[in-house]
Image (cartoon, rainbow, N blue to C red; front, side, top):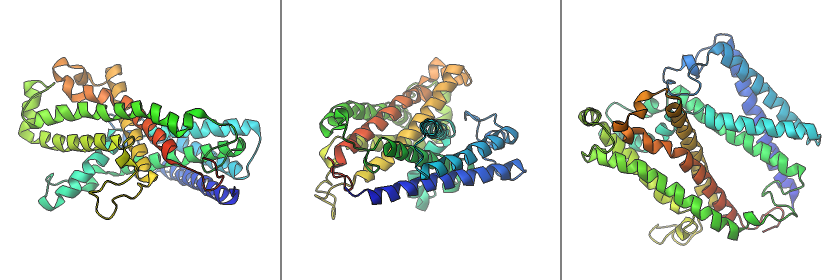
Amino acid sequence: MTSAPSTRWQNRIIYLAGIWSAVYGFLGIYWLQGGASFPFGKNDPGAELSPLKNLTVAIGAPIIIILGFLGVIIAFFMLRQSTNRLFQIASAIYGISMAVVLFLVVPDYRLLAGVAYAPLVILGAPFDWPAGIDLSDIFPWPAINQGICVLGGFIWIAATLLYYRQNRNACVYCGRSSNINKWTSPEAASQWGKWATYIAAVVPLIYAITRYAWALGIPLGLSQESFQQGYDNGVWLGGAGLATVALCGSMLTLGLIQCWGEVFPRWMLGLAGKNVPPLLAIIPAAIISILVTSTGINIFSLVVSGTSLDMLQDENWGANTPILFWPLWGIALGIATLAYYYRRRGRCKYCGMI
């Protein structure tokens, strides 16, 4: 077992968490002093569906300052490898709470929409389609900030997990210890991960079916008036593009349990027969699971609260009903990704455990 490299890796992640928090702490001071581009709430013209739509600079900036510099303090004591039980509990609460806020509260539908539209905009750029739209339109500053916050969520959950592993005398790199958890074995993960993968692959198909139907002139789940308006504006063609992205995502999700998700298939020239790097599947799947879950919870909360009454109209059920299943999709995809990790991680290069 070689613990030194994993300890250095752990320290880099905690340093990064502290730096990320410090940057936002100073940004909070800048915004509180009247600085421009506060990317939340009242200052964000596209935040009408955001959980933070009513947030003002006077309230939001101090919260950012407090959470930012509190994160710096916690990261400092993590680096000192504090074994104080009270601090361990406090750091776990902070890290998990930050991840929940940065994953599920800060992002809204625009970040997922930008990620979904980006391939269409890039591929359609030579043909000026969609007309007059480029990447800056689908990724305005508030959406970019949301992406940075999601990244911060991953950094903080990683730092918290590494600190937790250290204090339970587990391998910092892989998390294994002398206490064997049967549910994390490749055999167990292949069982519980299979059902999660199937759910994560089926749910986006519900969305894709409605959007393909509209593109083909079938007003599935829409009033004739709503359908005709979208048809005249050419909106449903873009919807078909998003449906294609969802369909491709559904097919790629199945790779989490298929052999071609572990070994590149024969038709991939130059890669055929080589092992698929686990992170090539884990990183995008983890990001999409977070974005889909946050968007789904956002839309679901609006429907339940009655904030958007048009979403409750029976004649237009096809517009938003498929999105109500997205929290299930995102959670299932996250579980499927975790199972894939447990199946693919193999022998740890630091602790030597399997």
